[in-house]
Image 1 (cartoon, rainbow, N blue to C red):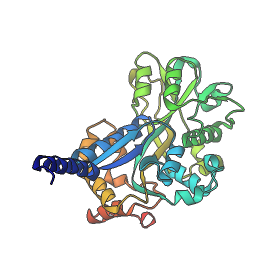
Image 2 (image 1 turned 60 degrees about the vertical axis):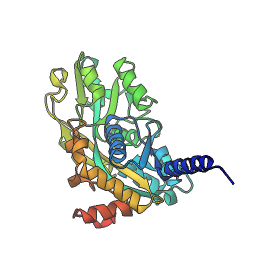
Image 3 (image 1 turned 30 degrees about the horizontal axis):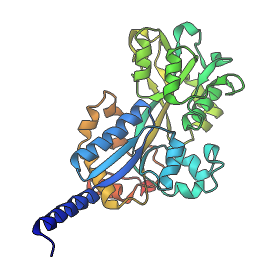
Length: 334
């Protein structure tokens, strides 16, 4: 017969193991741009703060297309998804052209909510002499990482306005987001394209000691056939930001007209409905804590724009929360 002390220790150990197993672990993939990084990491913190039985491990490396494929294959649980990315994946186009089952994999992804990742900001140094898109000819331009949707959309935006072909009329710099920001600060590239809600930290830092300018579209540019074709891609709307949002060192005389981009928090089909319901409910019931993180948050993410440009089905758990909360959900998301 086993001693009582031994039995007690065994029971305690079993209880500890059982407690550890009861905790639910999930993986989140995000990109390092300020807006998605802030929103996704804050989402993870809020969920864990109010649900001690859940832990979310956040990874801020890699590109969004890879994250989408990983989630569709069950290798990660949450990611920054994008309507344009989902459109291309479901069609097997662009960066998904060589993925044989891309269309089927796209069906494994589910939405939780959308938010504005920001505006496409084409930043240049004022002393560079670059004043319009046509001036990019022969310049070194960072449009986005090699596999990113931003690179495709930004290049098409430049072409729609100026007719310039990326890689032919100007050099397309092949870097990730963070190295590109550093290269721009070091003046190793002429143009930095970043999607963010201004004032974005990377440009704020530059504007502290340098005159900067942002390139954009005119009213007439939005009416061209090329621009209308570009804007048919899901996740893009016409937008603008103020001529002085970066302070006295911003050289623009008028508001900058550019693309407003929408992305979202995406998950995969296999996660239990109850888990996603609990996470969605926690996030929206404590959205004030999200809005307190940064000045632009309240305008970029709110329940009124949670389905803006959404082109995938909501996860059933998220849908349950919105229905219970009395939020009108578009039929296309159900």
